[in-house]
Length: 74
Image (cartoon, rainbow, N blue to C red; front, side):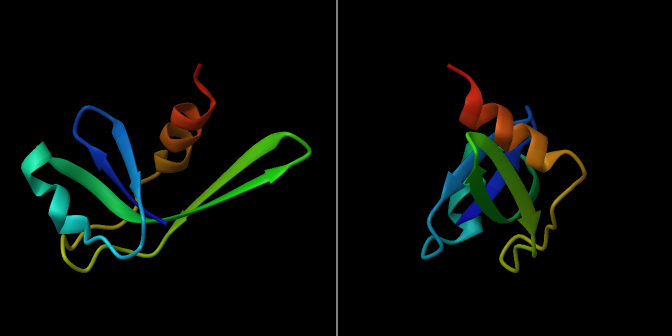
């Protein structure tokens, strides 16, 4: 799965067949890469890695936390 983080600290997750650059029209993208989500004993673990070749961006520190908040907020 891929992801981007918008300037407003908003994460967007999407499938691997979609290009990171397809989301440029949404605004300033501050980081991008790939995300792995694992659920272990009802705990969500999020790992970000890699880079976006189309945007020339990599994950930033804290991206995994923003994604985890997205996934766990009611």
